[in-house]
Length: 254
Image (cartoon, rainbow, N blue to C red):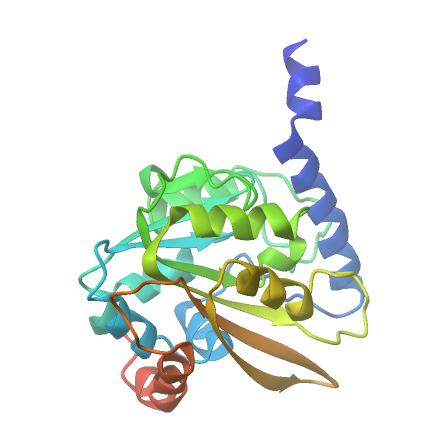
């Protein structure tokens, strides 16, 4: 019975679905998610982070949550940067047994390898096995920044994901993620930038978007700030600072 419960667990079902999607992506020459992504990947694909972290210093929380962090190598590197020193970092994964799909043996997707890497990077105590639709065990109004590097497009329910991001963010908290816009691979269905932007707007978030080319397609960086009467800094100003300081961040990256 225990094995059947494990098989039909919604989170495990989602993990198996994502594995199939990522295998298709890999066969088409695309590996967007990249479990072993680095801190440089975070800075480049998110369009910089200095403005985001500087803005968040005035919030009543210093917690940063990275949704779908893979091996946590990248978010660990971000946590070591000068602009992020005052923050605490947590991450989520759907499973601690999934290895990088970009490895030659794409069928060998379950191993203890990822668990070991997480422990070496951010530490198992800082990583929670949960979906974006639940974000357990993060408390209400507990988080300053939520990051998503190509993870939310894989979620089963964008509506639930945005609802829970809103639940854990403090007033004035900030979400920043990168999404496909017009990917030719059609693997994401509706779960592109165009799906998530209006969902955040429904929760009265201030929105800013930056679109960049990705080979023959486009991707979008979405920055959304939760409504807060005490803070009047616009999402566009924060995003502009991120973009303007990106080159310096890359130059000083350690």
